[in-house]
Length: 202
Image (cartoon, rainbow, N blue to C red):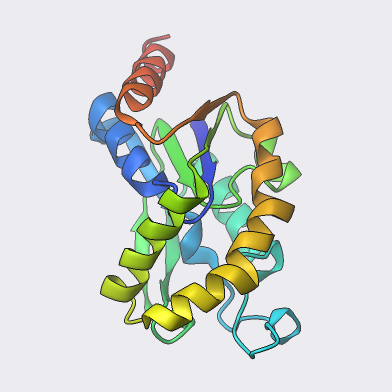
């Protein structure tokens, strides 16, 4: 199994980019794993902001042990029950998503290049570098329309956690990427899909 990591800040278009790669490379040969699924069931209290809000943009907000185990299981040819995280309740749902092993696993998330153990298993490492104003606008629309958030809470969260965590933890992942992608992802997705096809044909 080939592993492809797609990292980038919140609102950078990771999921959209991954889906373009899936379509271009042939969905039957690829599986997709979302890092958002692996938020801890209860947000760590020690990471809460001064206003008492959870910090979803800190590395310690994720269940790394389960994530590493699931990636290892998929590499070993085993299916996994990936968690489903409910952002409206800030907790895991009782539901799970069954992820089957495949020839290629696309692993997308804000910290997909962060963990050394996972990073060393990635065959291709990609970072989406998108201007902050674009990422913020995308996040604003998503959180208000899909996650039931208020405009004020999204703006407050951005300045309390999203922006400082991006600068401290997320952006430095660029140094590990094989290549970076800007706002226009269609061409880059096509190139990555072509590379994946080459790997599959070897």
